[in-house]
Image 1: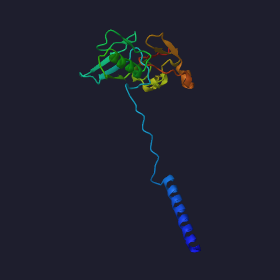
Image 2 (image 1 turned 180 degrees about the horizontal axis):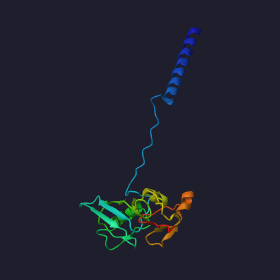
Image 3 (image 1 turned 30 degrees about the vertical axis):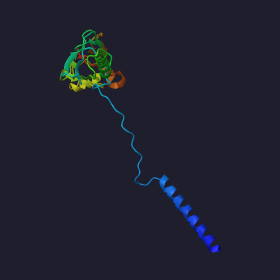
Amino acid sequence: MFLNTLRRLGIVVSCVLLTGCGGMSSSTPTQNQVDPLPAPSPSVGVGGNSGDLIRVGDKLTIKLTGVPDAGTFDEVAIPATGDISMALLKDRTFHAVGRTTDDLAQEIMAAYKEKKIYTFPHITILFEERYVNVGGDVRTPQRVVYTSDLTLLGAINACGGFTEYAKRGAVRILRPGQQPFIVNATDAAKNQGADPHLQPGDQIYVPRSPF
């Protein structure tokens, strides 16, 4: 009888151990278990250079797609008013100056939907290449392709730098819609904060020193 009792206890202990091991294996990850990666968030792009602001004189390419017909492809120069119009929306204008291409594209798409002209229009707005013009006493007067980090000295360096006759203390910048202003390029070379960032359409003129 004593032996039978020991056998029963042995069976119970074995069951408990097996159950405990099974529980541990189900809660402990194996080497092949990997936490799932988060799903990528969807992105919608409606324009290039989307962080840059539209200015008077900019040239934009505006593409309308996602419509039953062939869509449209327009090249638009931003006038002094800052307003543009779109095909089939001639009863209204869209103010472009001071806005990003994404913002403008969203407004135009919404207008097509509100007027029930198109159900799923897609607008893509891209900047055409933009320039600043550098003339006067630089080694190679020319147009310089505009970039958002372009400064006065950067544009002059792109033209080969100043000539030996350049009046560096009185470089003139003409900006559309503003009064011309003078920059001392000698000071700008010593102090980065004095080297102004340029805008598309700027005209830089380096005068010649009389001495």
